[in-house]
Length: 489
Ligand SMILES: *Cc1c(COP(=O)(O)O)cnc(C)c1O
Image (cartoon, rainbow, N blue to C red):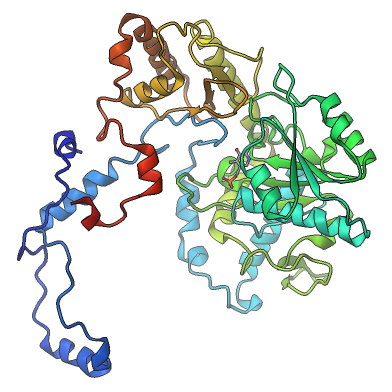
């Protein structure tokens, strides 16, 4: 995009009377519309639309599209989000008419293959998670958390244990954990992390009693550390009568290597859009299937796909003990099919390589930068790591400045100021899909920024200078977004 144009905010391209298309006069068609619609619904005046020539319209949209940064345009080390490259073949598959053209009202007999694929994914995820059964209904990780907590509530309620109103989450938890607990009508209790970033078991124990419904943990946690004491934690949680929930957003580094079910987790979700090949970002389409250990299957929501004794597949939506519905239909079907394609393409052996490569990439980047950036938690890390800003803080260069300068250098910024454990958090997740050359280029950029922080920090603080907009008012943009072309004039 022409940054000079943007600099002076010349956004209005419309010139009265200008046209971008040649539509033949269709008085007959216009007459037909007039006859079909009641007079009261017809416009009295032409709509106030922008009037532009075709090249201007094409350039406007094409230029705007190049302002998007995505995994397809560059390295996207956004910690906690697993912005990995998603094979294009899965996109082609998901948009094929056989899949994208299905209608939820179609009788089961006309969609046998689709139901079998759905059933297969349910089974694969159960195997991968070490769970008894999965529901593929939820549309996102947060939706999965809510569904999982509703399963946990249903479990306690059925035993007549109505006093369990609290959910314990670590202070490093992703914001959706407490938010989901609140939406599920539960109170949130925070538990501390130790200096090594893992859960403080003594603090957790002191908070466990008969008022706790569940403990929610992420593993590896949001600092990129593996929680080694899950079996011990699970024992303490179960002894207190509560259930242990696994936030599977960080399943990527242990995919095919370790299973939450084997560690002692009772309920979990998986963010298919993170680990299993769906492009995401900006709230884009996702899926957050929920799995449960044996004994909790009956609480999973409807509808579900089952395999009948004769080998055929059917949809059930009438199991009484189920939560009811959390979605209209079976779920986000095209996202589910991408995940299935990804699992089948990699196979068991391929899946086992995801975690080690993601972990190797993260440790390589971390160890190539920790002489210039502050590494608050001793390594090695798993799939991601957190720096607490630059080692040398005397120049006043903050994590925000580093992130903004990276934009000038063609990289998406890492996650910043999360987790809340450190003042200058900067969280990098390279993922297993990047080449060594890409990682080296990122390392070089981060090292150059650290060097600039000493040699020319006043200039560095002006960054970004090469992006279409330099310093938008982020609060204003979030609270008063301008969503119509007219607002921009
Ligand atoms: C992304 C993420 C979530 C939320 O998942 P959504 O699919 O964005 O709703 C929850 N926990 C962690 C640790 C995450 O990284």
